[in-house]
Image (cartoon, rainbow, N blue to C red):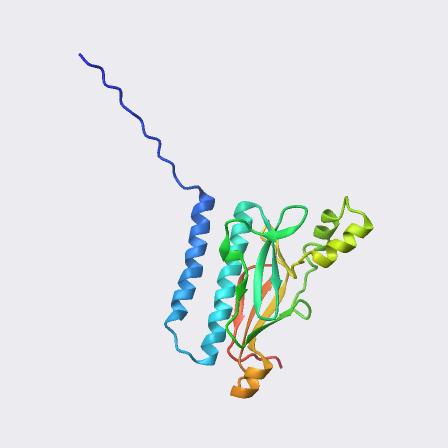
Length: 207
């Protein structure tokens, strides 16, 4: 009689982190698809850009929380990017292209506000701790040289879920606004301590 050995197959499942990250990315993609069928009105352009940023930011916050990673947001006039902190420096997050530089549509600009927000509690953390840790073993000359080269985020997303209170306004640049009379259109994304973020627009009440 022949003996047959039954082969056992190990099935590798997905971890909770992998599932959560995939869900977050699906949310970002769904937001992008939603607006791909919208009209080409100027307010739709601003709405799409602001909602897309919100989706990516909230996904980044969830990613940092699940992977115990400190993240930072770098804002420029017409782009934004998320960086990771490795205890020494800020750099791009490996194998996460969705956190890389995101360019805004032509004519759209960003204005970042970190002050004058409705904050009643003290800031939950001191962002200077990142700089102190990174410069702990460097000489004065090395520190000064590093400051000139290093990109420092304006908004921080801590691994515990806390974020720097901020307000980010999506609007048309001066040239585009004057040409098409779009100065009154804008969308504002605000974050106070944690996600979710809030969105206002297409006309802001700043009175």
